[in-house]
Image (cartoon, rainbow, N blue to C red; front, top):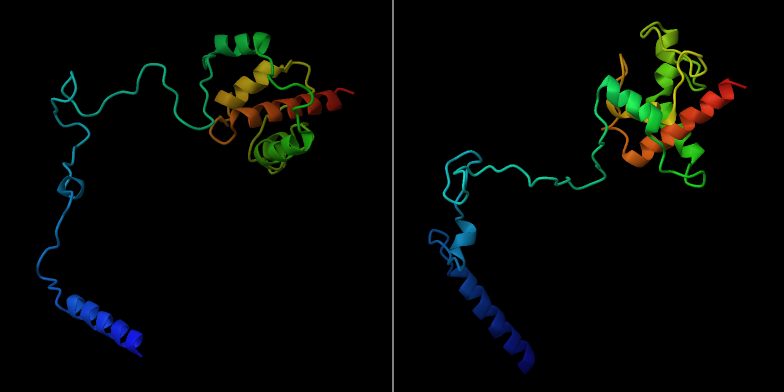
Amino acid sequence: MKTATKYIVVLVVLVSFMSCQKNSRPNYQYMPNMYESIGYEAYQESDAFANGVEAQLPAEGSIPRGDFMPFEIENTNDGFMFAKANLTSPLDSTQVDYDRAGELYGIYCGICHGNKGDGKGKLVQREKILGVPSYADIGRAITTGSIYHTLYYGKNTMGSYANQLNEEERWQVVAYVEKLKADLEK
């Protein structure tokens, strides 16, 4: 009984302290700089940097976080020809997953190029896009490098897939396109 009385007394004291709180009076701030920091505008003048502007360019050669890696070959005809002749896949035969690559191909490429690479995708059949050639066309002469360059930058009416596919996924799709090309040429 005595312990219950002690608990009741402590509870009454706590409730009385809480009921005496005045909401009209501001609370104490122990670290006011964290509550009232100085807001800087991105392009305002500042003495913090040598050029006198708050906004600064990223450091030379810096790479953003994530899966992004810069592609060193230019988006020009010369860059395309260089990639076509010299670019090879970093994946070996054990790293290529044709099931996953087939799914990616079906999502991004099959709508125009067809699921077999014959140039008869749904958009071509519905005549929404015309002139999509088969991978087996003799004039195409596609290579590993030309496929990757085209996926990265796009070519003619085909847009870039650099934002939709990361580097490893692009190489998977390249391997799948080469497989489709070999199947069509049999």
